[in-house]
Length: 281
Image (cartoon, rainbow, N blue to C red; front, side, top):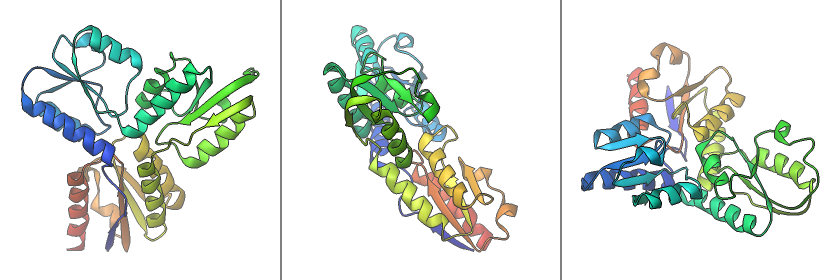
């Protein structure tokens, strides 16, 4: 069985930077350290961070004192204000691509634009972005989310969640643009996300089966699963770790491709490669 890993897979530079920053902070052992939600969507990495002293909390109110980590998905302006009011030390690991979206939203909101975010309204990244325009953004995940009574918009600024497929951004932004006189549209999808999606598609066309590694609650990983399933509907396996693999599933495949979401560390990818190599032996 031939095993091939996608050219672009695993940790992106933003996630790697966030994780390294968090591990460095826990090693200092100066005072208590907390994370507002999981830093990334990978419970194995979060588990290792918690072993080194990190406490994961859901709100600033749960942090009595010490240091607080802003997750890679980012948060709204109000969270920074709350942390500063409690005199907490902020360790900011917001992804640079997410920070760019936040800045665009903040600037255009103050210029009088209506903000539209194409993305998942329940995702922490989108919730954080909305917090930079007083939580007044129109959040659109599908065509049905565009209100029929939206009415006329004089000025509209459109951004997109970093992990959204480009095709969805183009379709929905075009529909939204028809509702406004003046539109400022920004393709804020992450280039690392685009690279991983393109690499996964290319590899899925070459092999008999695909293994997609990443958190079950990871948005960018789920997009990779969807892309692979379009090509390999009956032979795409989404797992978090090698322990979820079953050797019986791979006995009839001559080639297997491996890709991984941007929150998946290299050691988990290597465990999967070792598992598949054992089948060859």
